[in-house]
Image 1 (cartoon, rainbow, N blue to C red):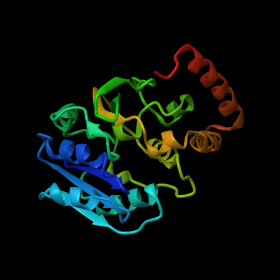
Image 2: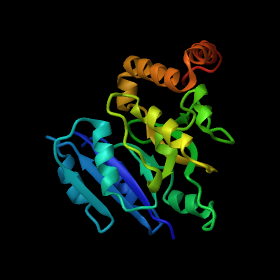
Image 3: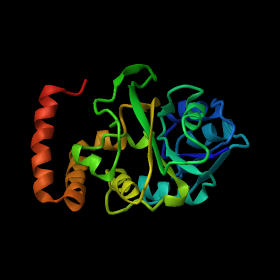
Image 4: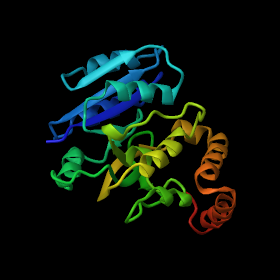
Amino acid sequence: MKKLSVITVTYNAEKTLERTLKSVQKQLYSYIEHIVVDGKSKDRTISLIQKYENPRLKWISEPDNGLYDAMNKAATMASGDYLCFLNAGDTFFASDTVEKIFNSISETKLPDIIYGETAIVDNEGEFLHMRRLNAPQSLSWTSFKQGMLVCHQAFIVKRSLFEPYDLQYRFSSDFDWAIRMMKKSKSFHNTHLTLINYLNEGMTTNNRKASLKERYRIMAKYYGQISTFLHHIWFAVRTVIKPEK
């Protein structure tokens, strides 16, 4: 059986972390570990982590250089075959989600990347709507010319392929990282499942303008200036046709 390492990085996350801790702990799949890297929180985050301590949970709390630095640190602590990144407030869609993920793949032909759909939830964890961008039937590194079609949390990567997040990007390093992971991957598996409940207020959401500027730079780096410019014209049209709910 293949093992999944679920990574959560936190800083002063007392309002949202508990649902994530509960969700991972309630997974029916046995071969799972939860790694929490905290940036020396000053609220009740640590006491919450201690409340849910169990044999499958590993955690540290120490100063870091931000979200992506903490993710890099967490990846070095992981022992699973695959990595999944859940922010505080995000949860698996259901208690049998991880079980369904691994039941959907062949033990003899393990994909490099596993992916699926994402549901958007409110502060109470209640369903709002499905993510506006749908995961494509087939995925490749050129897919993200259309934007980040697969949510970071629903993008599960073989640990052996992991490369560190680029710390020059403060808000959208996950976008750059996902493209790099896809460029070096040979096989992709669409689970056709909703994998994640995504809390609709992450760091990227709260810093949307800066995030979009970074994403433009990243897209231009991989896909070229002209292609990126033309795709952003389409993004503007797409937003009018299918606005955010």
